[in-house]
Amino acid sequence: MPAHSRPGFPKAPPPRGPNSPRIPSFYRPRPSATPPLTGPRLRSALPARKIVGLLSELRPQQMFLRAVSSGLTSLFRTPGLAAVTAMSTGTFVQLDPLNYRDGARVEPVDSSGTEKAFEPATGRVIATLQCSGETEVHLAVKSAKAAFEIWRKKSGMERGQVLLEAARLIKEQKDAIATMETINNGKSIFEARLDIDTSWQCLEYYAGLAASMAGEHVQLPNGSFGYTRREPLGVCVGIGAWNYPFQIACWKSAPALACGNAMIFKPSPFTPVSALLLAEIYTKAGAPPGLFNVVQGGAATGQFLCQHRDVAKVSFTGSVPTGMKIMEMSAKGIKPVTLELGGKSPLIIFSDCDLEDAVKGALVANFLTQGQVCCNGTRVFVQKEIIDKFTKEVVKQTQNIRIGDPLLEDTRMGPLINGPHLERVLGFIKSAKEEGATVLYGGEPYEPTDPKLKHGYYMTPCILTNCRDDMTCVREEIFGPVMSILPFKTEAEVLERANDTTFGLAAGVFTRDIQRAHRVAADLQAGTCYINNYNVSPVELPFGGYKKSGEEVGMHKPATVASAATPVFLSL
Ligand SMILES: NC(=O)C1=CN([C@@H]2O[C@H](COP(=O)(O)OP(=O)(O)OC[C@H]3O[C@@H](n4cnc5c(N)ncnc54)[C@H](O)[C@@H]3O)[C@@H](O)[C@H]2O)C=CC1
Ligand SMILES: NCCCC(=O)O
Image (tube, rainbow, N blue to C red; front, side, top):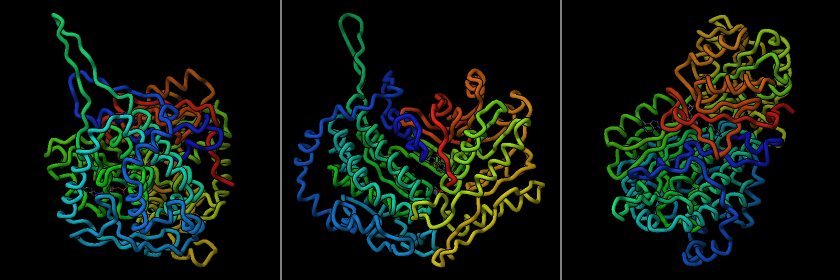
């Protein structure tokens, strides 16, 4: 998550992958092949000259031509790069094809309708995408199958070299990619840069793991022996949400490719732009054409992908209702799935905490990416002794969060993703008031002074008090900048209330009592628990959910992140 690279967190830790340790799930299971839970980061073990060798085998001239023919040549160290980075809000329009197949941008051969993508800061349409139809999905699968035949025969070391080169390219083009992400998603450029860091770090991490994954040798009676192999599954599908478009594409593709699979990625139709940049980067880094294809579209396109006979696995990030549908469809095809779904996570603040840190923690747990983060700690339980002091300070600092043009350096909160979502979030605040909550601050539509932002989807971050556990705003995922503050008396009481939810993605605890911190973390039913911090997510740790927040990883390997650093500070 965005906060990994923030100032003060131990030495720029790499991000966790959303499914990490996901490697086993992208392998066809073989008897007793127990995967490593974590792995060393081996970037320094993969010498750069080997990468150059690999790329020259793949005819760089051809790759250059491909890059030139794509509309994003400007992202590849040409004078255009500066132009993208210097772009201002209200100027970008996407005219290039938005599907990517066989190593090039293409228009889909058939479509099941169109969708408009907006620049949330201004409300302008920046792209109209053709939703890929069944034939286009089939062509993407066919192309990925062909690439898979090449890729699966490569050694882990060779695959790691391509991923490392892709990571290097992302790093090199970080500002330009972050700019595109901000334009299409609305998050501040400050945050988007952190997201791009966590993206290339993820590729580096899996590049390091790729070479070290191996099967087992098993001694059998009378001098016989057996062995297990790790085999990739085949063509995997990644379906992404709109809140971390580039990062989700990286977090899904890096482990899949590291294990020898091909991937077809479908971004959210709200944020179609940046996955294409990743596709072009993989091609430039030496991935065979078709290894990472992008198909655009909404639910119908997603269904064609999940139901395709030749798709071996689906990795999904999105809402619980869609996750259920994906699981059902995949079950019909006996396909494994990884689901990363919604949350309504508790943040518990004990009276013995460092109050300054706890306030910063609550801000970062609620207001990153305008509150549109799955693992946000939106139920803020505060021990009675300090609740007045805490609330006063949280309100003061929330008032200082600068809202506005997300491409400006000092903006910390941009617009929400679109008009209907803004209305939905404001609707939650209305119903909170009707149910008896008090709006202490914010929760109103906001119009920045710059006239070009007049039609953007802005609101003021909202602090609710007088909340009860049975209120809609406390039970349901709002996916917007709305913090509910709830008082508590005892540890036992707060644990019971914190776990009384159908979700279980994340949780946080602020206390100076180290024993209590670990005791509470162990008892919280959540895939990740943060101690004295929030929204940090090192790649070495798994990220998954209990209950309806997801499946596969979290239930068995919940992670506790005990951070030595202070939480990121959002107000200026
Ligand atoms: N646990 C996690 O890591 C994360 C979870 N989320 C969750 O995602 C939600 C917000 O994202 P949204 O994009 O609004 O979610 P969504 O569920 O509406 O859509 C997610 C993706 O699924 C596709 N889709 C929709 N219906 C489909 C169907 N029937 N078959 C196949 N694909 C389909 C969409 O086009 C999109 O690409 C929130 O609930 C949030 O908590 C978001 C980010 C991370
Ligand atoms: N980097 C944020 C992870 C959580 C999310 O995708 O919502």
